[in-house]
Length: 157
Image (cartoon, rainbow, N blue to C red; front, side):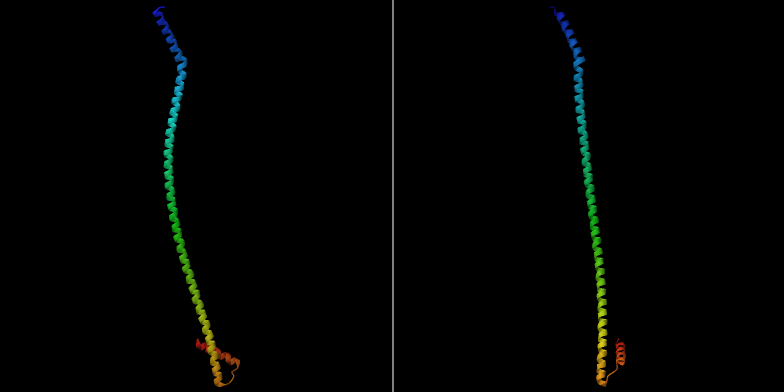
């Protein structure tokens, strides 16, 4: 066999093999590589998106925590103000109750003093009549007796 013919035959077989590879083998390989590259790109994009979402979620969480702390501080302040207001209202109400009790006690004491004074006047009048009766040694009729008691009461006031 001739070296040139062998070389030409090998060259023809090489080109046929190259054409066959380019036509039937290379496109599925490129398609698989492109799909793999697309999956990798999607994975990287998803990882970047997840990283961005995580940073955003952390920001939101920090903001929500700050808001919750502010609301708690506001609620605590409001509760303290309400407590102070309730305490002050209770103090005012207690002072009013004490004042009413003092006035009622004073009124009761005045009424009691009046009652005692009235009883004392009646007793003085009775004793004066008894004394006058003993001095005069005579019985005074009931009508005159009542009039004298009334007059003595008036004079004692």
